[in-house]
Length: 289
Image (tube, rainbow, N blue to C red; front, side, top):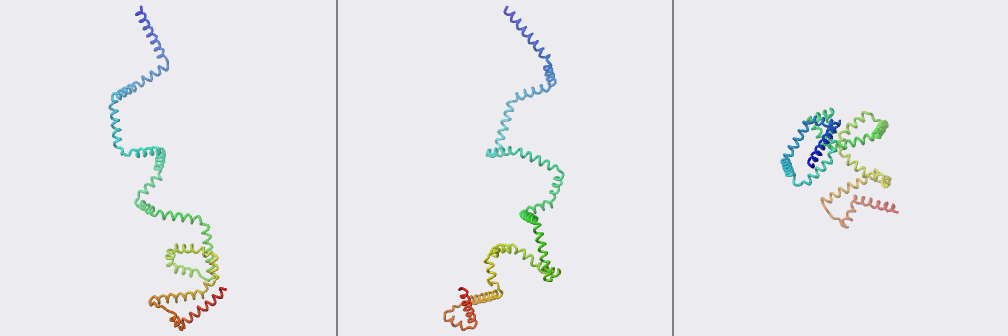
């Protein structure tokens, strides 16, 4: 009884399962999925075969990967930390490098860039570029000077106009003809290179004495009579006499005592110099009051 009942129950379950399977197969989505699987049957078979082959060769593949890793480690330098740091930095800059490469690719695709490359391949162009790079500092100075010149263009134009106007007035006042002016310029031309050579030193001297010229002391010096022609001539004569006396004493040194000084006072030239010193002392002493 029990055996027959179990058999009946098992048969009933199989019938129910078969019925449920048929119901599932009759569903539209199930039928569509089966059709899709049947359409991809060849691909499924290839995939199953590839996975089976991969699983069968798993140990061989693992050994090959381990050997490759070992070879890679052997090829790397001993200072792996530095290389790792460089790789990390490279990975961080990859987005920027990618953008740069894309921009360069777009640039190199332009016809103008191709013409530029063709021009740069010429030996004479490369030689000219090398000369320019050699004198890059001079070029930078020239560009800065030109920029400064252009920035002051209006001021320079006005100065030139004023200078020409003043020159014209001077020429009219002095009755100088253009021909005479040209002759004077031709005469001056041989000295122009020397003037250019000493111009930096001359400018430095002007910059150093400019504060003194603008001071009250310089005005007092101009009014003091030091630059009077007679004063200048006298200072020049005294300087010449002092230099000549110094040369003579160097050639034949000698000492003069009290008696020698008294004897020298008999000389008319010495007497004139002594009279000048006495008169100078008298006048200068009077001014000290």
